[in-house]
Amino acid sequence: MLKKLFLLPLLLIASYSYADPQCTQAPETQWIPFSTAKQQVIDQGYTIKKFKKTDTSCYELYGKDSDGKRAEIYFNPTDMSVIKEKR
Image (tube, rainbow, N blue to C red; front, side, top):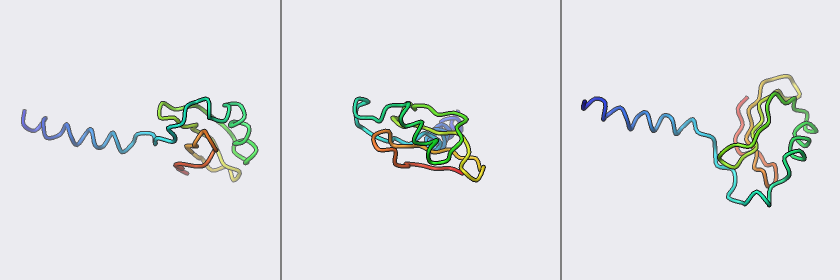
């Protein structure tokens, strides 16, 4: 039982480290429209596999960059600045 109580905080910390970043506190009325943001990503040379709005107030891209390398990018939906990027 004591071991389980010790492991629980470790699991919570580990799961938090994989959480999506918080991109903005701005209300959605101040965000760039979804379709406009999606087109901006395409115009930057990305191929979209999935583009979505996250629960943490981000626009998230799963796809490939102009070199064909896989990319996962979190954008601030108010100005499309990159918050977090994995390649």
